[in-house]
Amino acid sequence: MLTTDWIENYPGFPEGISGFDLVDKMAAQMRKFSTEEKGLEISSIEPGNDNEILLTSQSGERLSANAVIIATGAAPNKLGVPGEEEFTGKGVSYCATCDGPFFRDQVVAVVGGGDSAVQESLFLSKIVKKVYLIHRRDKLRAVKWLQERAFSNPKIEFVWDTVVERIDGRDGVESVHLMNKKSGEGSKLPVQGVFIFVGIHPNTDFLPDTVEKDPRGFIITDEWMQTSVKGIYAAGDCRAKPLRQIVSAVCEGATAVYGVEHYLTELGL
Image (tube, rainbow, N blue to C red; front, side, top):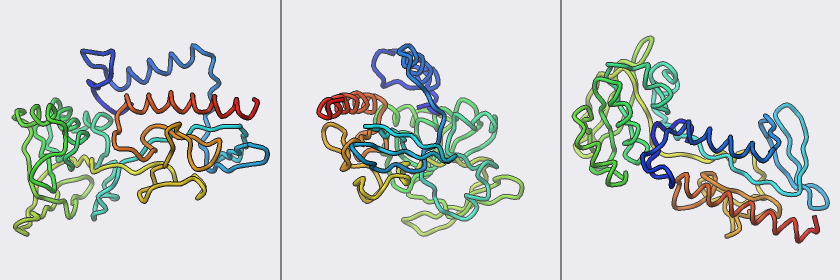
């Protein structure tokens, strides 16, 4: 949400709102209720004694609670091609709103075909000279209204049925080597930036094996957002679910809190 340029599908903002502003408003509302905040990176969570959940931070600080809600979200997938790691931060990016201004009036490639790829291509088109949107299939997965905007944008050119095989350059990105999946033909596309949006993976590696996950690592919960471990709940993009939008994450957060309240009441707390 924080790295999304413009959000148009969240209720209450008919004209849309920037991701930064929406985050800021949510945080301000939370602080009205004197919520205690701790800046810690949790490295492990495990059940303790007497309905206790133990949390350990990277710095070694230990916390305990009777219930925990996991809302760690998800991180972008990588292509796993030569040059990707080497040029990350030097032309390869996973966030157009973060790094787009560095490519003003230049030519960039966006890899992907979903909502994020198309939305970020539209954002980049306001800054750069040209956007090549590279997709491994012959049609997009993005919602229809995003597709219509992209197809009508003269700065966006679509490269269909194509995958990136290599990212090349010296001090920064200079080109991508492509392969058409249907014809098998290779080509070289000169670009100064590559923005990758090919899905996400959940930030759940720190959770114990007792917390059940699907094959991709997303947390499985019941209708109350409770995981397979009593007292541990999950909400948002780290959950196994069909829809990943801000409105669904907010709903799940409310359900998780409601579930925690019932759980603590049952414990007599």
